[in-house]
Length: 142
Image 1: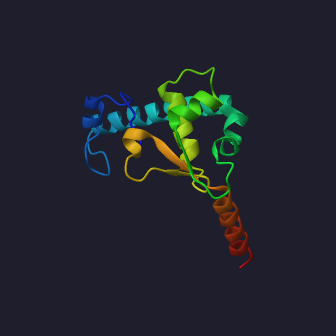
Image 2: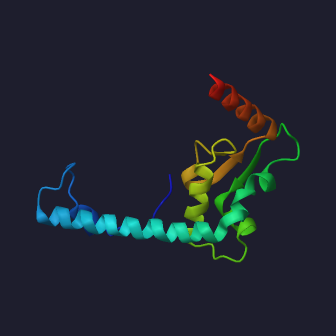
């Protein structure tokens, strides 16, 4: 659900092959290179996420409606501009915020129909977030 522009060159992806297990040295070497790039990406994302720190932690309170029953909307770019106004709106910043929001599905719901083009999230009403928390508490007791 998120475009990763130019992270993996097409020729590298093609060299990886299509089988679940690499069968040639070319495929194995390409897969090792792909894994190395993915690890570098994860490290870079961790650094950006660490830099965003507490500003993302209270993002829900900043973007939810003051009406406890009303939904709101926010795009990844809008959130980045508010929680990280001094950071460039580059791929890593947007991707780190995207991952954070995707992992907070109790509070943020990706637009089911147009997310890939809009990067829009729906912000759950406080009443629903509270209700979901109660359901989780009941489930833990069982």
